[in-house]
Image (tube, rainbow, N blue to C red; front, side, top):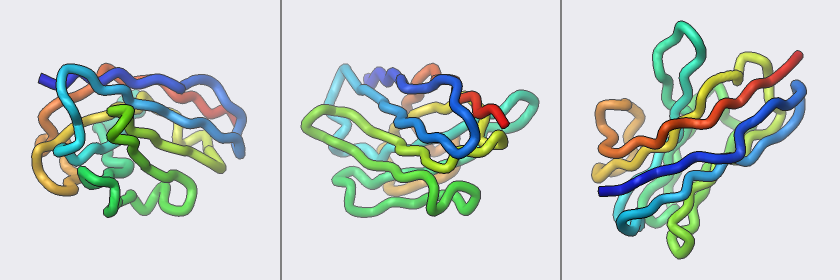
Length: 123
């Protein structure tokens, strides 16, 4: 079992930055691809970005490409999402997830989920 806990969310003005962290426990995530998803009120959960198990490959949604960067530190069993140039439409609960499969963007391809952290971007 892998337990995931997100942190770093909060309220920020448009144009600002936040760095989300996802701390894993229970077992090493070094063999898992890790993904970030988000869900805004009344909307479906959407893929944001993912990083391969050793951090070499990443995959990022077009909506955040050039603004968000995913990374990981397997020694710390932690994954990060650096979010720059935030927009009001980025407001959502952000979730971290772990997958036994290589880079994936569908939620049903992930095996473990955190409970999320709220990001609110004001105009």
